[in-house]
Length: 530
Ligand SMILES: Nc1ncnc2c1ncn2[C@@H]1O[C@H](COP(=O)(O)OP(=O)(O)OP(=O)(O)O)[C@@H](O)[C@H]1O
Image (cartoon, rainbow, N blue to C red; front, top):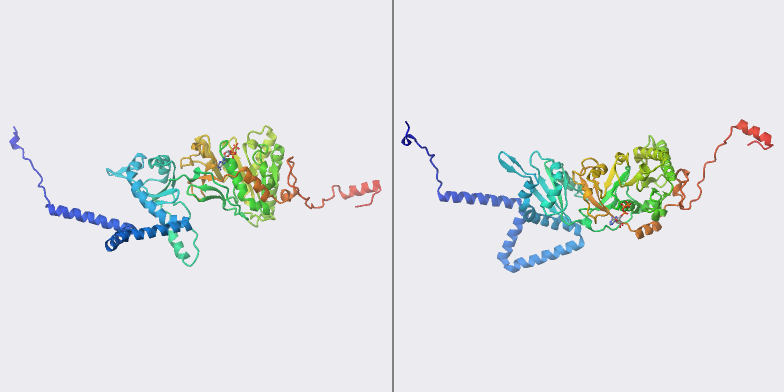
């Protein structure tokens, strides 16, 4: 029998450090951390050292005088050049401040509750906040993802992230937002090299643009009209970071999807406006189809080379004529160029269709509908390269309403009524990547989502608002040339008046009857041979 006295209890011998060694260890550890922090924050450390030295040398005046001088210099800088002031001074300062006092404070909680934190080896692992850069409207957070995470996981919870940081919108970019600046001058080669490093592809990072001040809440005034429009960058809207968003119109077709009263008109009129200089010089011709009987576009009639708004047959004719232009250009340009360059002799033809569904779905005449569908199919599949473009607006983006929606390379989604419509307009997965066009508040007229060139990430923009008075003024200032309607000497069948145009010299037409028959007739009527 075993009694309690038989059990031998082993206790590991505890090694007790002397108190001075513990204290020394702590001091060394905290000093190391402080030195590391100073090395990582040279500007803050340098400023603190200088401030301390000034205080020791000159007392309070040593701090107050430089502070007043620096504030004055900063105010003058901001007054003279606000954008560089934000880039080089205010942005980095505000960003550092908000990184410490706003984002770091709630980071762990926000990442955990937004399901972006994970556990590895029984330890929690979090995405790492590397940097915050602020400007007038946005905070751009550079975040190192946890190993194995993808930007899509951040995009899926972008709304949660916004509310976690006390804001309404967060955009998630898989690549650094913004393009490298254009460098000129002597040191351009060096700066370009630096940019190449700064803008290199970094797949471990994701960028969160937190919208601090919603720059799209205010109405955007119309943009200036350039004398010669740059068809690769037509400014139409304001971005969340206050920069203009420009449309690349050359060699593309544009589809604008939006519920009724969402502001589709402002997209189309913003485009017409920036093309004004080209319309007047004859570099671009607008062929406008307004199935709403002219309610939307009749005000700008003098700017349009062709305008139809009443008869659907005339609309079908106009599209057929656009196909004729396309065919003629294909024959002429084949083997010489791959993309047509607009000139005044050979202008860009932009067919603008307001409410496309009226032509493709709601039209009762089946034959006419088929004719229109066939012309539209040809224009959309072959017109971009030869400078015959289609810009169409649509309320209902379902496939049975607009069977060719996939043929529009550039798409814009304004406020929509259903979540599923967002992907129908912008392409699969756009809503999951943050294009919440179905959640537009009531005030957001003319606010929409666009997909940026070269990246899959949607961007929120607000189109400029062109009022009726602006349209009247534009129509007076930038009328289409008198001969504008006569591309290929075609005459439309629309009843609405067109600008007066002198008749184009036409080629003398050939004889209608064979010569033997004509001679016979001449002989019978006693006329002279021709
Ligand atoms: N960019 C904008 N900024 C501010 N307000 C706008 C903007 N665009 C449109 N609005 C306002 O929203 C209203 C609806 O605009 P608009 O008629 O252009 O919408 P729509 O989508 O073309 O409508 P519909 O489907 O009837 O053609 C207008 O009364 C206008 O005042």
